[in-house]
Length: 62
Image (cartoon, rainbow, N blue to C red):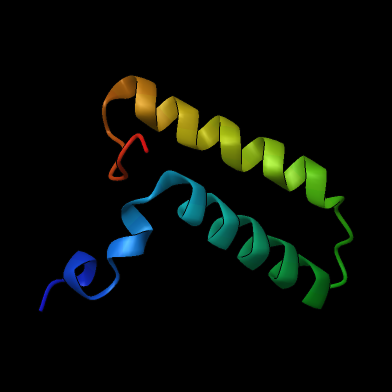
């Protein structure tokens, strides 16, 4: 079974964004690096948008 067959929700941009934001925020908090969640959201959105524009995104545009 392929990765995206097992976890098809990762192809949804909104879901992927939430997972990335929560993972980065939690990891940074555990390492005592306090970064506002809104800043992480902006960075993740910018990276996903860049991937989408370059055509290298692996998520759908839903």
